[in-house]
Image (cartoon, rainbow, N blue to C red; front, side, top):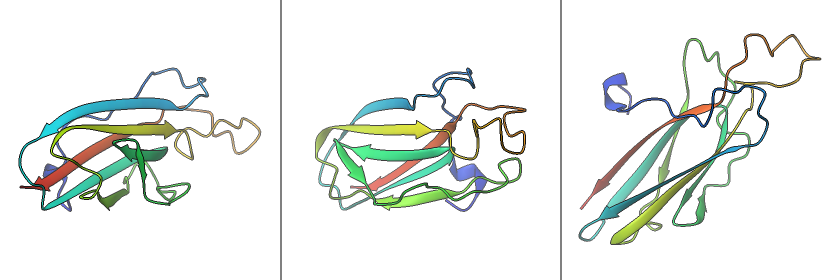
Amino acid sequence: MLQQRAWKGAWISDVNDVDLKPAGLFRKAFKTDGKIRSARAYIATAGLYELYVNGTRIGDHRLDPMYTRFDRRNLYVTWDVTKELQNGENVLGVMLGNGWYNHQSTAVWDFHTPARAPRFLYGRSHYL
């Protein structure tokens, strides 16, 4: 996923209300056919996230991804989710938080201006 053209789709966010403090919750059901030999999830976020596959939290990272200059680059994390997927119906979940992208402390460095709602971009690959 090193080339920008490998990332399909648009950035996903719950709202444009930058003053909304609760985490955004996202859910996507999808089906797989056949035996899954290998599956990876790629997630890039502007903000913090937790990724779930079929109700299982993926990884043990906290405060991920690291801080970056969001106007210049977005970092992504790759997870092996082969064991979490099953043949047939599967569910992907993302809990999205603000982090440094939409820092909500007005007492520090005037980070609330301009404010931005957190968002994420998700990619997946699986090999049958």
